Length: 274
Image (tube, rainbow, N blue to C red; front, top):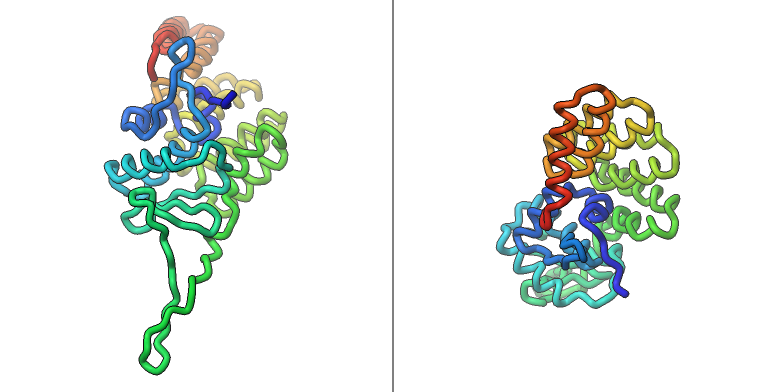
């Protein structure tokens, strides 16, 4: 049976907030199925496309072109493909897919070729493909980390660290590495990873929620409550943040706030959509 993922699992794996994922669904980038309780269920292909859509949006590619490219890419992907073996990026104003040494545009199916050219004696001649730049030859460490999480969490942590060496601002790598360290009981290390991401990404709901859960496990309830509140400012649809904050408020005697968050949790948990 094909493995699928919940909305929460997608957020954890890709480092995307619930609101961003739902926005990409609303825009038509992915069309997840529904589970028994009408909750969204995502395939592995959906994960590929969600990550690509987010990256292409940040690269200022137009929504129309992204939507067209990703719809065609979905139809072109084989049933099984390793995430680390596929790279989707913006080249100029086009969407380009790299798979191994091949590069192609899903818009028109055309392969992208790069050639060296020289003109000895005034005559123009092709010298063959240009060597792929080193930056493109590097492993996709973030995607490799995702692949390794289920089978080898320690190697997954190392892959996320390598991703952060290449890009210290990579939010998804910070979130996933911090979560794995937390799960492995390395709480202080997890806190350091999360806090390193705050200066650039302190308005991300998933990052703040994970930090709040960590603060609870470190027995710092006041700080946990503050992080939950910040997470809900960033993403009011975080049902678990409402529930956890309600518990903390109840324990701190903040009954009115506790009731408000319990009510929000029930509404969100009972909703059939995002």
